[in-house]
Length: 336
Image (cartoon, rainbow, N blue to C red):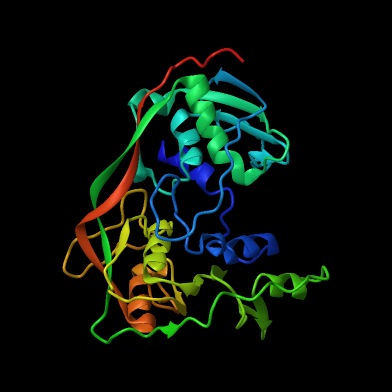
């Protein structure tokens, strides 16, 4: 179940800069999250984008055999969305719900076990005027109309982290304001990079002074930039960070918006929740960071937060998490 959810949640993820397209995806990982809720239905003290209430114009939903790994041959997995059309091959109800409710992690969803092994193929046409941004509400309507999905939200107390100020005190800069409009690109590599807030210096990509928020992967390191961000925004972004895989709540007591940049080495935590409630607070890592032949050039995430921003991730057992519970659904969808 988690493997399939990660597949659908990671279509837009970028991890490296061997390919320019991947670099751009990584650099803009957080760009669209300025002061907005990470999940549909969550309350937020910041302005919410207007969401239009669309339904698919036409939708075919058919039962499918389980995936066998040969659905797409040796080629890449095609995108589920193309202008005017949405298609998923061999997908489960929970995986559809993951998209419908804009979830990031497996712990944000609960469902009956049978849903994890029952697959469907979906082919749908978007109505005129609808875009990719409107897909979540359309998928939610599809689940309700065709499967009779019944769900509710519940707050669970989970092991996670508090973001607090380290003993050294905060090392943050008050925000200079939102990022200015991106410059117009002339199609060249340099202008494409600058439009995304990236410039090359001595052959190494880095953020420009006018860049917005994002994550830039350079070799084995991540440069994380926040522009005009509150500490609540940072806690939410840390919760959404795939390698941390744990909920984070703001307990810094710091008000207002900040600009910051910190560089770290990712720390993979496997498939489970990465929280370690030990005094050392360490997270298992592999490769050089775990004592291989060469130590990492940059500190791990939590060390980088403490050393570069004066902030600390403190393990706790009671982070409130909004969880979507799928109560029931029909195993056979209504007729197309």
